[in-house]
Image 1: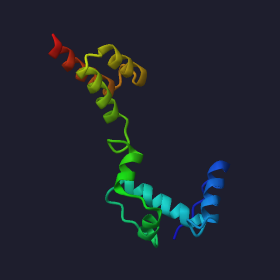
Image 2: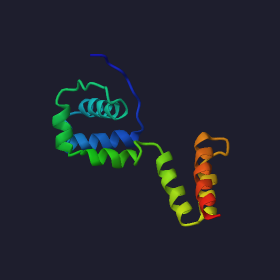
Image 3: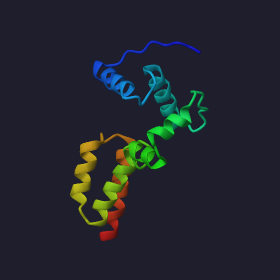
Image 4: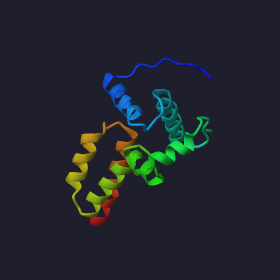
Length: 129
């Protein structure tokens, strides 16, 4: 097993220490191993978990698939789908200025996602003409 040194902010270490003291994790090492495997599993569906007792720890923490989705957002962690939903909602209601404000506030005008959102908004405007 490889050993790697990582530095964390003091506040993070304090929180992890508290979890260990409360018995949620046997040690800081267990927390770090579980956390790394958990995140790798979220971002790579082909990741093969090798941490001992991973499923048992996950079960004890009572992390459900719904919790995964909630933590990541509706589209797996990117803001874009939430933005589409927001622009669509405003577009359906004819609140074009609110949708424009939202896009302008969250995106640079040359950003691909911005261009797509503006095109989406345009489809709602076209329907109202």
